[in-house]
Image (cartoon, rainbow, N blue to C red; front, side, top):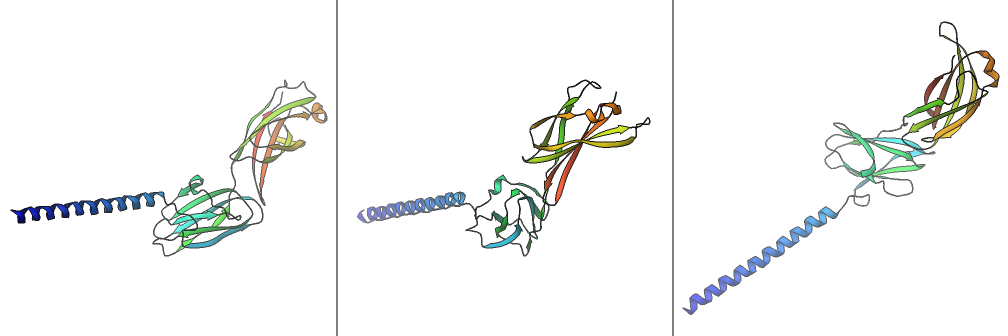
Length: 236
C-alpha cells in the first residue's frame, strides 16, 4: 500500500512539473510572437544600404525598385538622415517592380536601406516626375462688349501647393473662325489651389472688335515645366 501511494505521489509530481514546463514554454512562445509583432524593420536593422540619387534642388522624384524573386524590405533615408514613413508613400506595383513616389524630395544624397531577401539582384532606376495641373473656373462677371477694365478670376488646381506663372492672350478670329492674330494682354503669378482674381486692362484692344482670351499657366520643375490652357469667348 505504501509503495503504491509513493508511486502515485511521484506520478503526480511529474505531471505538475510537465504542466509548469509547458506553461513556461507557452509563455515564452507568446512573448516571442508579441516581440515579433512589435518589431518594425528600419534602416538600423536592414543589412544593406546604397545611394539612390543626389539632388541639387528640390524635385518630385520617383524610384523604381526592380527585383528578380520577391519584393525586398526597404527603407528610404533622406539627406538629413531621417527615415521616410514608407506607409505614407504613394506607389504602384508590377510583377517584378515597385515604383515609389517621393514628392518635394530635398536636395542632397538619398539612400535606401534594404534586405534583399531571396533576390539575386536589385536595381533602383529613378527619374523626376511632374504633377498634373489644370485650370478651373476661368470666368468674367462683366457683360461682353461694354468694359474698360475686365475682371477675371480663375483657379489652378494641383496635387501639391506652390506657385504658377500665367500669360493671357487676346485672340482675334477671321470670318471663318480661324485665328488671325493674337496679342499678349496680361501676365503674372499666383498660388496653386487658390482663386486668383485680376482686372485686365482692355483699353489697347477695345476698338479692335470681339476677341477670345487664352489663359496659359505653367509650373516649373527644374528644367521642365507643365502647362494648361483655358479659353474665354468674348466675341459679340
